[in-house]
Image (cartoon, rainbow, N blue to C red; front, side):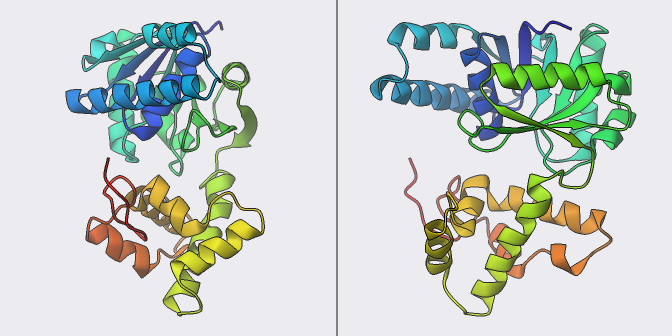
Length: 285
């Protein structure tokens, strides 16, 4: 299986980042979203990121223009024809399977379908789509996708070893550090990370220390970002959805129970950086 073209579905922060690194790595890239305004924001995000790389001397101007020329932005699903499709849409099973089923009708029998899900079962997604489950796998990037090195290559129950090998090779070409993972709730990182977030929120709720102090202490011992700053970056709605998914998957095991500090923020629309307010306050750009 030779991958020459990639279609990324979902032009949010994650989808835009995946599209950027795909084009940067030489793939013909299509970024699809049903929202034209979302596509405009994604284009601006990618251009800003590449301009920053040029200003830092990490990218030549000519290379920036070549990367942008390799990306097509579209709101028409019929334009999503590629060797590899990576979906990065809302973390909802029916939405993901519905999208894959639509795309299966317009793509070839060799197209690989990869989901960027962070908590849903790859095997369950594969079982609900019309393509053969051997061509469905997980390719879980981390935010910001164009910078974070780790990619979890997730094999469902029936994922072909060849498909997993292809995704591993694509991640390598992108300059990532791919890790092979079997389908399991939360895979590796999100399962372990629940305790990072939840224990930090327990400490704050018990008034042991405030958000800033907890973040500073954890950053001082080597973590790149403290849990509250990281939840605001990811989005409290996204982070809470992953926690709820694992809580359900593990039959409501207490260690995965969502915390009211985050539930209340999501209820109030305090989602983090993208709304200007989460655990911290941010200037809107």
